[in-house]
Image (cartoon, rainbow, N blue to C red; front, side, top):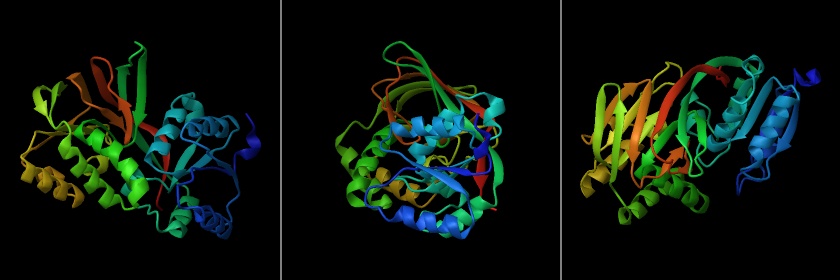
Length: 309
């Protein structure tokens, strides 16, 4: 391992469409704070994992990702591939620059305030955070696992997140893209047959959506925290149309659990025995539908994450 990079930041920059000048602002803030760094830029979604591995293998102890939730998801999955004694020496930070920045927003990092974000990161205050983990079998029969910082969504919200990512590129506004995506889904499937075990309860019925969150889950698990070793689960039964619009309002205002069709749980493990025809997303990125039963658990305090000072 190349130890000469131990005191320098490795910065992985994921450009966002329409934000060509953003790196210049970030670069100025880094220089103003006297931060030594090396810079790599991703060319595509698939290159994030390759570049993250390169930074890890070259011995960087502080890796800052300039990107959103999907890029962070790639980063933590790369960290989980290395030996614990190596992973424990690495601190991961984020400068929000994605289509969705829910995990950064949870800690108080704002895309609009680069100066504050860099100043906080420069203090290198570390918090050990949990990761959720979904274990499943893919269509080729391979046993797989994927880690997540925010949530796994099953059903309608997985479809919304997929559409939201597409419409955000066109519309720019996060809130507007979510509302438009929700309206588009009025013309699609609204119920999914689900059977799953949560604690001692068995949910065996048609549901609209399920969110299993280690973090705030894009507003669907607002009481979840990524450091208590537990998952928050929100199961949403099919509301009437006017209740659906009320649910969207409560989601956007942070009061999602107040909706009478939302049933919350807290647990350390969820086993989904059946989720017929339901799409599944992990940290906002569509996974498709796992084959057969899959399980979601928590890995406690496994990532060193840089938080505000």
